[in-house]
Image (cartoon, rainbow, N blue to C red; front, side):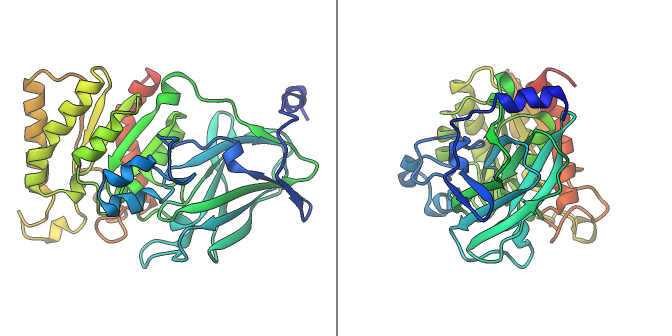
Length: 363
């Protein structure tokens, strides 16, 4: 093992103890490592995405969906040749007819190699309580890992298991604009439907590419740019806000809600960039009657609102067209709307061209 790795291992916190040793593995509660992607700590349950007081503020479906762990993750350091996990899900419903259990209710593991995140393992659930080898035969040496929690299910407990002779510790905290990261408010697409693994939603892809924090406020079927969510979002202080709500909105919603949402964010955060994302082009559009596709009128209203905001000299606004978000080769969606992993990759790439400079200062 290289000397630098020996020195790094020597620095690992010796007081960071496992909660259990069983079956030749040391088990650690991920809450002791620090959950990332969570905007509020005053939650009703450890893995909720909204604060407890939001229960009386948002609509019941939004509250229920906020108990899904989409976007939550944990980073850690270990020299273990293998990594296992135990996790208990809130719901016994593991998959949907168009989304696999690996994405809806599974865990997704990444390792950092040469400054880039690479996939390292997956936990595919078979029941509400699960124990799984995420990956093994890892090359010797200390490295940083990141584990994502389920996209469309909640968890009540998550444990990481490493080999008994190995060591584990917290990863170095993010700093500056990378720590501030992104707050992404949107729909089922933002939440991650229908990614094959829990690290494959576009906010997660984007966060890994930019090595930054990401707070996923996607609520399946329930992300219509409601002012209650906007007011909760102003409690956070990200490097950038991303609004991707149009698939859950009507043209009238877009006309009435876009400008008030931006003005509310801007009043609380005068200098924080705001990215406005158009509705995706639905994949059946080429064979449908013009004007009946569903996204066209919403995008017209959205662009009009953006132009009004610019005329009012609202600064720090960025606009992303929906025309190419999924591509035009029919590989971008499961059902014409919800992205495949290819679709999520394309959305992430489209947003990265805007967000990278905000987070890193580089194009």
